[in-house]
Image 1 (cartoon, rainbow, N blue to C red):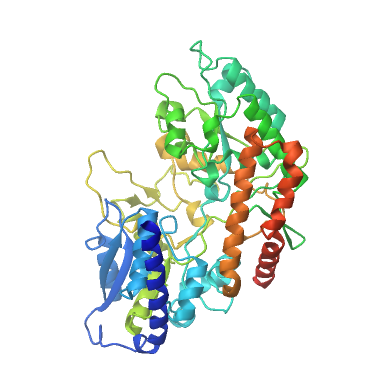
Image 2 (image 1 turned 180 degrees about the vertical axis):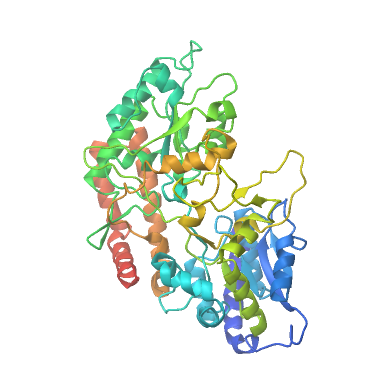
Length: 544
């Protein structure tokens, strides 16, 4: 039944795109809405959580007054699957809004979406609007090559704006957090090599660091539920670079695959040895993050020795336990000591104008988002009202990066306080460069809730700059629309093949020594050569 519905939606979408393309000239004509002194009406599709009412939100009201607009909201939830389905149904029906304001980690237009809808005329190019009405966006595009590459399609058009959110700790998300209380009890040092880590995990398993007289400790765990929580990338980086996503390498400008190299085999052999000796939780390869956190929060006794994740809150929420975990740096193996690096912004379109928008609506919308590319607009739209949700620096305040100039401090909500409903939150993170985020004020006690971001900042410095000198920039690569479907299918098959076989080799259901060559040869049947050709061409055609 579900397949039937999805097929129907797909056919409906294709038909509506063709119709939309035919009617493009009519829809982009200037309408009479908003003419004269009245506000310009803009129909906006956006996600909305339980604590926000975009209709009455104080930033919505400020934006309407400042730009003489009337925002007419069509909202969906923060559930990624639901949000994507609602957006696609709206597009398929032809009854879509003037403007999409989206949150990348909930749902946004992919690069392929933008190219497809742009070709059909459903999505409008923003180039002229930016050039004439958005000086702040224009400046950011000129000064941030990666952002420009993410935003600019191969035909030179900007069909949607991604958010530029240079979250430092997100840039090196695949971290290992170790129970340093246990290290101290067992008189162990923080591990720096694969062998040292193995020795630490063995001690966690056998020497009863939680002191309850039971061998109930889980030395190392993780979850495939989040790419940053998978145990494989962090461990593999001691042998060969693993970007945790594409598994592609870049050397002297040449694109290649990591997962068919002998160094990858060495990494699998090491991880397999940890698994065989009971040093990796069996659930680490199958459990969701809720199950991982259940282990971290175990009520009877603290049982988790280490976990891979972007930050400790992913695997433990119990405050008394959480303070015990500190980040280990990258492991220095026989060949490498890499850290996974990923540009922290997601490619695609979070701000997208459609051909239903009048010329006045287009101009007003681009001016609104341009305001969010200023520091004043970014603070007001993302953090809310001054004196309510944030304050200016005071004497003694320290920025999250101590050498940076302090910019603002967030005012935490009080217990029982009503939702403030004074910002657009994550929907407004259009321009948060590293220097802006570094200026956020944080408590100096990194183990307090108020110092949590500082804790992540300090941990990330252990990983900073440890990536290879060349990293395949999958976040800024546009695939030729003519081969986009082909590339997507091959990529999915290859990535699934890597994940499935890695798990089988690690758990022993496949013999790593006897079946390695067969595994390598299997990439030929998956059209790896063709895939690398496509990715090489896309990289060569990029402006990076």
